[in-house]
Amino acid sequence: MTGLVVTGWSSITAAGVGEAPPLEPLPAARVTDLFEEALPEESAPVLTGFDVRAHLGRKGTGSYDRATALATTACGEALKAGSVEVNDATRGRIGVVLGTTVGSFRSTSDYSRDTLVQEKPYLVNPLLFPNTVMNCAAGQAAIRHGLKGVNSTVAGGPLAFHQALRYAANALERGYADVMLVGCVEEYSPHRAWQTAAARRSGPTGEGTAVFVVERADAARRPGSTVQAEVLAVATAFGWGDAAADALAGCVLRVLREAGVTAGEVTAVATGDAQEYEPAARALGHRPERVTVSELYGQCDAATGGLSLGALLGRRLGGVALLTARTRDGGVGAALVRGPS
Image (cartoon, rainbow, N blue to C red):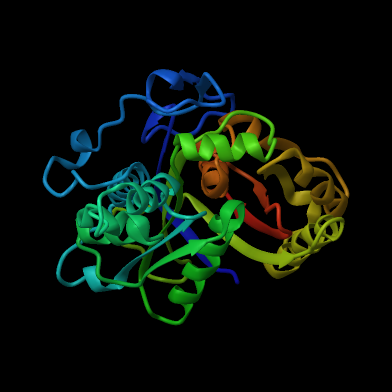
């Protein structure tokens, strides 16, 4: 898969709305003041004070959970950044694909709990049911911004952004859309914080979202659009246990071959966690600059890949960079991106 360009993007992290993720640890906020539930950590890199109404208004946003609010806001900011005009002539050709782990873990868990603790016959709030499905954020983003093109959600955990890129590439190559918003989102909640702690993962639980305006490289440029990066190739694979490292190295070799790029041209590697760097460096044959997202932004799971690309674009990527991903159950992925020359 080759031939995609990024013509606009936006991200939301603890650094702020629309601010590029910095290449330094994000500020940590005291999260024990934000929730009534007990938490396994006192502070985490979350965006305190985020109010979706300040960005999208009050109408229609009252039922949004945090993941939906973050993603819908970022989609709107990306459309503006990419100078994408949404009107009756274009809205059917603009699609959305978002990566996630399970949607809003909090919404799903709380709704399920209500079915057990509320009075029979299970007097749960039906207005909250849409938040329990994984495609809530992608659907609400399309509704909010009037987009009627392809709409999909990819549940892949840390690999979700790579999978979303592949999904968008297929949609664009087959002519199902002219423009795709490709992104990923993960919210902070007590549920995710305890999940991270129970899995004994290093670092705090993080949150964030990043959304990119992606188009075919050979398509006519829209007025006002500027190519900010090329997505040269994306590959995913599977390797259980110790085989995951070899599978990841294989993905790196595949994207180099498909993109027609030499290993020496790769100047930076953005990884989700520290385990990914050695297989990537082994495949490249040298040790480029390293960016480990989990050490900077906490455990952001599905948002990891998008925040990696946002961090590289925020530093005005000029060469070729490699983005890697690895899930705990053996999924691996690699993507090659190149900044404007």
